Image (tube, rainbow, N blue to C red; front, top):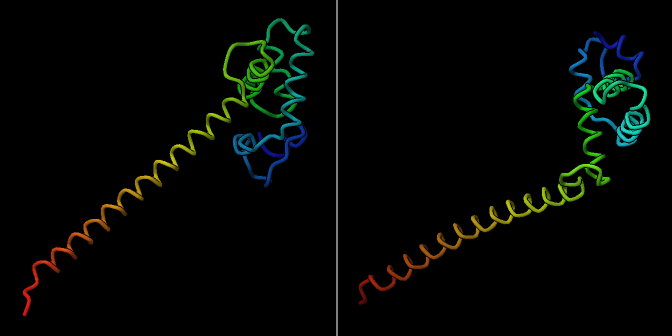
Length: 134
Protein backbone atom coordinates (compact mmCIF):
# COMPACT_ATOMS: atom_id res chain seq x y z
CA UNK A 1 0.00 0.00 0.00
CA UNK A 2 1.38 3.41 -0.94
CA UNK A 3 0.79 6.92 0.33
CA UNK A 4 -1.94 7.64 -2.22
CA UNK A 5 -3.99 4.77 -0.79
CA UNK A 6 -3.28 5.90 2.75
CA UNK A 7 -4.25 9.51 2.04
CA UNK A 8 -7.77 8.34 1.25
CA UNK A 9 -7.94 7.03 4.81
CA UNK A 10 -7.02 10.43 6.28
CA UNK A 11 -3.41 9.58 7.15
CA UNK A 12 -0.81 12.27 6.51
CA UNK A 13 2.69 11.21 5.46
CA UNK A 14 5.78 13.12 4.39
CA UNK A 15 6.55 11.74 0.95
CA UNK A 16 4.76 9.92 -1.86
CA UNK A 17 7.15 6.95 -1.84
CA UNK A 18 6.75 6.01 1.84
CA UNK A 19 5.43 2.62 2.85
CA UNK A 20 2.51 2.17 5.21
CA UNK A 21 4.94 1.07 7.97
CA UNK A 22 6.76 4.41 7.72
CA UNK A 23 3.48 6.29 7.85
CA UNK A 24 2.19 4.27 10.79
CA UNK A 25 5.30 5.16 12.82
CA UNK A 26 4.11 8.76 13.13
CA UNK A 27 2.73 10.20 16.35
CA UNK A 28 -1.02 10.44 16.58
CA UNK A 29 -2.59 13.46 18.25
CA UNK A 30 -4.35 12.95 21.58
CA UNK A 31 -7.61 14.12 20.01
CA UNK A 32 -7.48 11.37 17.38
CA UNK A 33 -6.68 8.78 20.05
CA UNK A 34 -9.56 9.90 22.23
CA UNK A 35 -11.96 9.91 19.29
CA UNK A 36 -10.84 6.45 18.15
CA UNK A 37 -11.27 4.98 21.65
CA UNK A 38 -14.71 6.55 21.93
CA UNK A 39 -15.65 5.10 18.53
CA UNK A 40 -14.57 1.61 19.65
CA UNK A 41 -16.60 1.85 22.85
CA UNK A 42 -19.65 3.38 21.09
CA UNK A 43 -19.74 0.79 18.27
CA UNK A 44 -18.93 -2.31 20.34
CA UNK A 45 -22.52 -3.55 20.17
CA UNK A 46 -22.48 -3.49 16.37
CA UNK A 47 -19.71 -6.12 16.12
CA UNK A 48 -19.44 -9.72 17.33
CA UNK A 49 -16.24 -9.11 19.31
CA UNK A 50 -14.00 -6.37 20.68
CA UNK A 51 -11.30 -7.30 18.16
CA UNK A 52 -13.77 -6.96 15.27
CA UNK A 53 -14.71 -3.41 16.26
CA UNK A 54 -11.06 -2.49 16.89
CA UNK A 55 -10.03 -3.82 13.48
CA UNK A 56 -12.87 -1.95 11.79
CA UNK A 57 -12.13 1.40 13.47
CA UNK A 58 -8.34 1.03 13.06
CA UNK A 59 -8.75 0.64 9.32
CA UNK A 60 -10.83 3.82 9.20
CA UNK A 61 -8.41 5.99 11.16
CA UNK A 62 -5.21 4.56 9.67
CA UNK A 63 -3.53 2.83 12.59
CA UNK A 64 -2.85 -0.80 13.38
CA UNK A 65 -5.48 -2.75 15.32
CA UNK A 66 -2.87 -3.59 17.98
CA UNK A 67 -2.18 0.10 18.58
CA UNK A 68 -5.86 0.97 18.86
CA UNK A 69 -6.44 -2.00 21.17
CA UNK A 70 -3.66 -0.68 23.47
CA UNK A 71 -5.27 2.77 23.47
CA UNK A 72 -8.62 1.26 24.46
CA UNK A 73 -7.03 -0.82 27.23
CA UNK A 74 -5.20 2.25 28.55
CA UNK A 75 -8.42 4.27 28.51
CA UNK A 76 -10.19 1.52 30.46
CA UNK A 77 -7.36 1.45 33.02
CA UNK A 78 -7.44 5.25 33.35
CA UNK A 79 -11.21 5.21 33.91
CA UNK A 80 -11.00 2.40 36.47
CA UNK A 81 -12.86 -0.17 34.36
CA UNK A 82 -9.77 -2.38 34.09
CA UNK A 83 -7.03 -3.22 36.58
CA UNK A 84 -3.62 -1.68 35.95
CA UNK A 85 -1.44 1.36 36.50
CA UNK A 86 -3.13 4.56 35.25
CA UNK A 87 -1.29 6.65 32.67
CA UNK A 88 -0.68 9.61 34.99
CA UNK A 89 0.83 7.33 37.64
CA UNK A 90 2.99 5.56 35.05
CA UNK A 91 4.19 8.93 33.70
CA UNK A 92 4.99 10.12 37.22
CA UNK A 93 6.89 6.90 37.96
CA UNK A 94 8.85 7.25 34.72
CA UNK A 95 9.77 10.86 35.60
CA UNK A 96 10.89 9.83 39.10
CA UNK A 97 12.98 6.98 37.70
CA UNK A 98 14.62 9.38 35.24
CA UNK A 99 15.32 11.89 38.02
CA UNK A 100 16.73 9.11 40.21
CA UNK A 101 19.02 7.97 37.38
CA UNK A 102 20.23 11.55 36.78
CA UNK A 103 20.89 12.08 40.49
CA UNK A 104 22.82 8.81 40.60
CA UNK A 105 24.96 9.98 37.68
CA UNK A 106 25.56 13.33 39.39
CA UNK A 107 26.56 11.55 42.61
CA UNK A 108 29.00 9.36 40.69
CA UNK A 109 30.60 12.43 39.10
CA UNK A 110 30.89 14.11 42.51
CA UNK A 111 32.35 10.94 44.06
CA UNK A 112 35.02 10.73 41.33
CA UNK A 113 35.81 14.44 41.57
CA UNK A 114 36.11 14.18 45.34
CA UNK A 115 38.47 11.20 45.06
CA UNK A 116 40.55 13.00 42.43
CA UNK A 117 40.95 16.15 44.53
CA UNK A 118 41.62 14.13 47.69
CA UNK A 119 44.38 12.26 45.84
CA UNK A 120 45.89 15.52 44.54
CA UNK A 121 45.67 17.04 48.00
CA UNK A 122 47.43 14.09 49.69
CA UNK A 123 50.10 14.08 46.96
CA UNK A 124 50.72 17.78 47.51
CA UNK A 125 51.05 17.24 51.28
CA UNK A 126 53.42 14.33 50.68
CA UNK A 127 55.59 16.48 48.45
CA UNK A 128 55.71 19.24 51.07
CA UNK A 129 56.68 16.79 53.83
CA UNK A 130 59.20 14.90 51.70
CA UNK A 131 61.07 17.96 50.42
CA UNK A 132 64.46 18.40 52.07
CA UNK A 133 64.86 21.62 53.99
CA UNK A 134 68.05 23.73 53.63
